[in-house]
Image 1: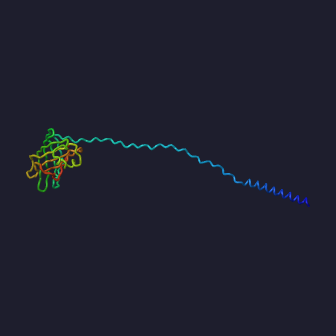
Image 2: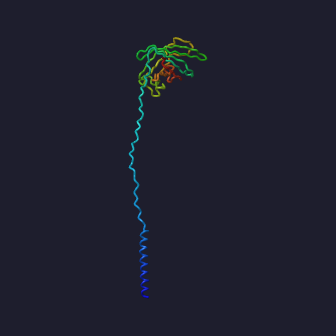
Length: 213
């Protein structure tokens, strides 16, 4: 009886030991593996970039200003005069003689309306100014559109009609008026007219001439 109990105990102990061994082995197999080390993503070295090309401003070629036409004997300037009542009168300025800063010539008026049909030729005496800012009668020059706008360079001329030599007696073109004009670099002669030597304001009209070819 005692031998049987010993055998039984020995078998039990053996089974328990086997059970422990198997448990240990199974636990070892199921033990969690440490995570595999991950490599950091490879970084690309920065690509060298060229700085943006500098845009050079376009080169502006200087333009040389055209000089004003020379004012000399033998010239004929053609255009119109705006009468105070709004009518345009054909006009010619004839330069007969230039002597230094003075000149002589004629003004040729050609117009017609309901009561007048006129062709009148009037003699004139005048003078030229290279620097209008130092000329006398600044109060008159300052009322010229070019002068008022600051365009004081170029040639300036002043003249008065002195005598009517050809034309109808009823033309109504008066002598003794005074004209103040500027010859611009564009070749235009622009003038204003005072009806006499004392008027403070010019007549409502303008002279616009260009040099004939």
